[in-house]
Image (cartoon, rainbow, N blue to C red; front, side, top):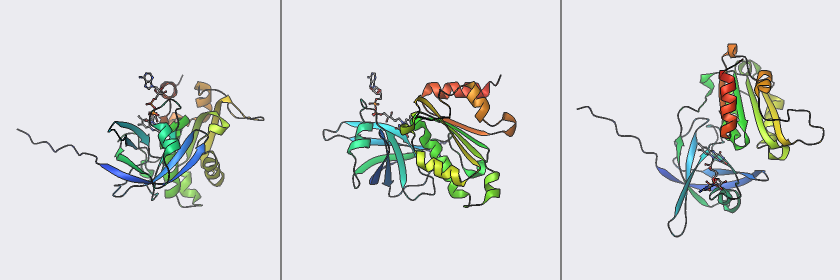
Length: 242
Ligand SMILES: Cc1cc2nc3c(=O)[nH]c(=O)nc-3n(C[C@H](O)[C@H](O)[C@H](O)COP(=O)(O)OP(=O)(O)OC[C@H]3O[C@@H](n4cnc5c(N)ncnc54)[C@H](O)[C@@H]3O)c2cc1C
């Protein structure tokens, strides 16, 4: 008879909302204080559990937006008007409120600086959240202004949003790219581009990936997150270059 190590249970923790910051008209970032948080890797997620007064519980998963180096845990939630949990997280929760969560969860969709690059991130809508944790982690680890370190770890983000107002982390991404020539941020807007928009204005397709992705010969680390059709289209195109 062989003995097996017991599976590790990830315990529920009580987090406190430190602040709730609007990102777009339908998206909010919750910054949380989580006593006993064991730390996480960029790309992981947590489960959030809400309990109603009558005992009814609802659980949903949310990617971690913050870098492992941040002292607060950040989640960015998009409101689905007809959803059960996201309207509460985006509209009702206030600083000081408590929230049950457990994590970190997820072992393969993770990236740390030692894994190396080049890094190619493709996101759609709130799929940017775990990718932003990677970008923030990369930025935290590479000393400000250290061009040589950054050159060894170039990163490109291709980010699809419906409209310019719906681009999550828009200003932060622009600020990071402005001070780091080795971080490129490419937007595509699928519905309503602003006047004078000169960027991509369509769904991500093979021609766009040909233009933006690193060549396979550079052996890029690729992470894709977003709606299932986007992930399937991007992944199948990248693994089947014609
Ligand atoms: C690993 C992971 C990470 C995630 N990270 C994020 C993140 O960072 N940010 C984020 O915003 N979201 C994230 N999500 C999605 C998140 O978990 C929730 O699914 C999302 O917030 C919607 O939850 P909700 O309770 O508001 O909507 P739900 O009540 O679950 O409804 C979702 C949709 O399904 C429809 N629906 C519900 N029940 C039915 C039914 N019986 N028949 C037909 N349609 C139905 C609803 O109308 C709605 O449009 C992640 C999901 C996973 C799995």
